Image 1 (cartoon, rainbow, N blue to C red):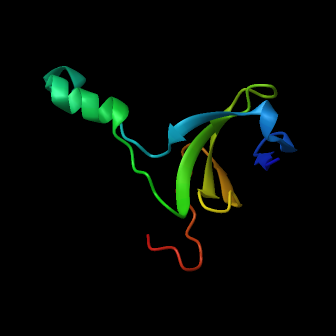
Image 2: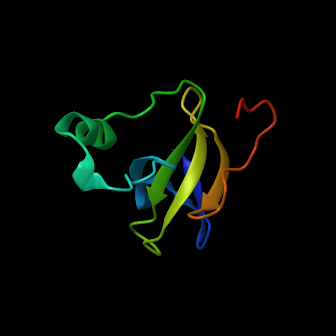
Length: 96
């Protein structure tokens, strides 16, 4: 079991949440100008990081708000939780 701390509701069991993919993926400025290949890359190609990874989550069984999580994909440990629109926190040893 993973305990996820919703920024609005506090710590809850992971079963109350749904994963939303990689965080901080900007929407194309002019999606109509993209080729099929470029649009496909935007929709389906994401990083597959080993270690700390920025993810989007929604508290679907609670407040229904989206937020971001920095989670270690090896250990599942959650290093940080932050609201949408907030910058990604810098962690000790973070390559970013």
